[in-house]
Image 1 (cartoon, rainbow, N blue to C red):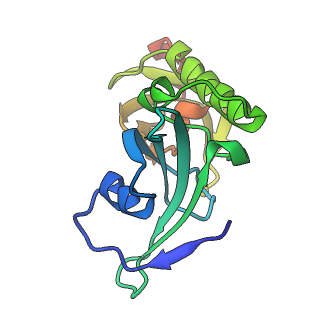
Image 2: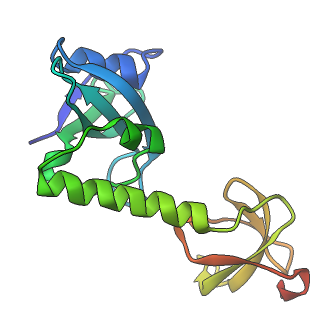
Length: 185
């Protein structure tokens, strides 16, 4: 399975786009997209639960990349769960819509997705002003290194020295909430 590049007009949702790519007898019943991991070579991942006419519902995974101001501005790689996709951040609604499968690869992929959801649910909820302590120190390009930060919003934190930093993918890292006095300069 390879990559497909084409021009995709603005304003078309992922659901509409992939419904047009799939066989007309297939129906997308649940879907969602996630930002791709850093350095993956693509920008986002689309997940969908797709129902066949006989009622069987399986998952598709599409790796997607946008190239603005290019003739071929959209590139994607479409696969189903039976080929053992590496990306396993499917939304809970997609997993809930799937019917049982006999495919080992699909079963392993579903288990990996569920494990990610369970791990995310077990992590402490973080709100602005909370002190977040990561299991391992983080090193930044300017040489600054720390493991405890004050959460501001999304992926923005403040260091004990007062610097504002962005930590991509921090919700996937091992962290805990820390007392305020733990934030050091």
